Image (cartoon, rainbow, N blue to C red; front, side, top):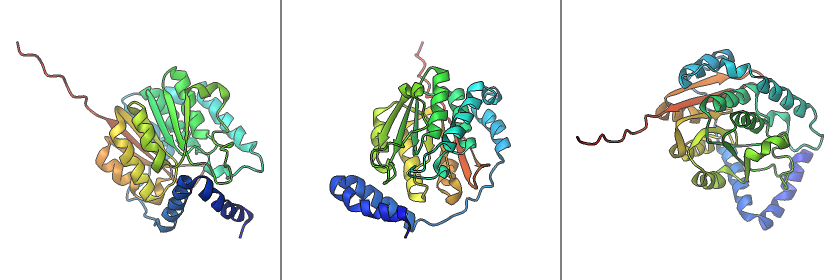
Length: 275
């Protein structure tokens, strides 16, 4: 048994007696992982290079100028530096940080859609949050609401959002807890969601629940990003029946796929007055 696992098991009774709701959430997540089964998506993924023209078509705007913005290169470098400087007592590995393709997709979509509200599940060190907040700061508009259940080894959430610079935090609201419990409350409290990012527990049950929960709250023009969609067909099944444009994208730095969906709903027209 590894030292990490021993420390995790030792903290179980502490959480049970001090935070019983959190204990239940963690237990359900553990069972969800154990009972989840791999299911290869039926759709072939795009290459990362093909993502940008696909987004341009779906969003109705050329996204290439956003990819050339100095702020995007700066956040790339910032996140890479933060990953290199992680202390040895960090509660999880760098694999929990958002892959660059995911971060850049979130940045570009925020710049293109100019959303009032962005919601993400799964924060970890906050690499994705930093991409999103950088775009919102350039827009000078919008708020990011992030939902995260911290590592059991990070009981005070000291590492949650560690990468996010202080100057970006005025547009950020962090909500701690499992998405099954916290996400519905957040969505009821905020306005229509222009971008939703799933990067929490990547089981079919949890992913399907998050997509179904957020769908009624999406703005008329909105986007959904999902990390690690290669484990099951939850994103694929949801996007096929719900969204206007969607695709799976092969990531570069890690062996995984990204899900991208764009919704462009027609706003209902007001009835014309009788003459």
